[in-house]
Length: 565
Image (cartoon, one colour):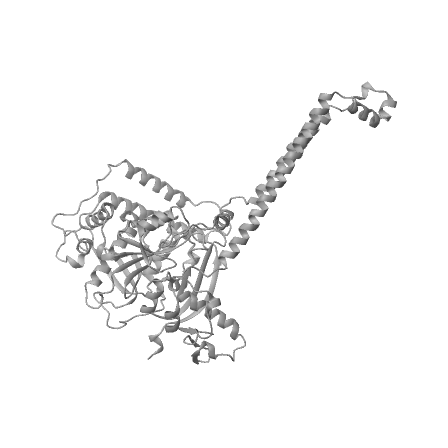
């Protein structure tokens, strides 16, 4: 057997970072590893345990400890029931390709002019002096063009949803491919030409230009972060070992990493980055030309990929390929809601690794941030409060301690103000006393206070009592909050120290269990982990391997190879 027949990985261990969804500091908890080689079978098993890849980096979120739990979502492609809205998206796209659409054409034309103006503006900006903050005339004209185009389109009549042409099959596979020119080469009257090409993931300058345009327009990334190297690391490089590297065809691609490219009139307008695995087509990333956003390309591409699953499943050798994996679903993220609209969908239980119907999971997540769907149980309220405080710190919410300080300052000023007002009533007017009286002012003040009316003394005593009671109440409230925060921190540390959901406890991993875990060292020696006592950091490495063993499970840990540099 060759080394390429195995999966070779290097574990990185746990990672705590800021959350890309709620932007909280330290809210994202994951476990990661680098894959040098990865068989499609092993990656399928990892995906079914909640893993996901970004280039060659594989990671698994810790759903319980993270601020925004990411649940793996999939749907059974052959049972897909398109909603009215989803059918309309395909019908509108088909009609646009075949017959054209004036509003769509105008919108695309306006956006293309804006893109060209933005490109010129960026070129002009790079040649300008550094540190200039003055807006360019092109940027102003582009904004004006956008507003004018929006006003022009909004004043037009609202179009009714396009219906599918007559005598067109209702099944998704036939309907979504009816606008491809390659399937209807004799039709010359169509307004546009659509070509969809499936190919192994590869770098081209055309793809990189499209990716850069998408990242800058949609995700507001600077051009410096969209260099060819970063694009390659993110969406081209893949650890998956293709099962048909030489004799693949679009009809029989085998398993591996692919790009599904969308060409409109021979112009690349979108790319779906997908993994074709033994049981599924897994969506990795999708980027498109923002000029064509009016075509709802994201929702259209999802149905394209569902149709791909259906087409492959009908071929010999792909009988197990039945599912479409849409990545992660986050209940609190509005951008993720569309994933739950593909019926029937299922979420992966983070502890049992069974698939549970989406609607049932949705009801549970309405009341809980994190839950195991088969055996739902409420989380500790103090732990949830700590998670909310982590989210709030980054989002600009003041911490509880700062509120306490503000309250103390306010109460102190208010409490002393009442006393100061009473003291003002006893100020002496120098015109009413002679020099001797002034010299004996201290004695006179004492006598004046002692000889004052009972009403004044009673009022003063009452105000002092109230001030004391408020002070004691504030101190008690502050002490209670401090105790609550201390208990909240204790519970947080206690829960986060537990094994991640669905993972074994590293304390239960004995050297005997690691006998079958093979390790490839920098000396090209392949041996069991327990047989490398010569390394001075053997104990530390064994702990790393034990944690990896718990994260991937016994079966995968025994089948994959660790590469220790």
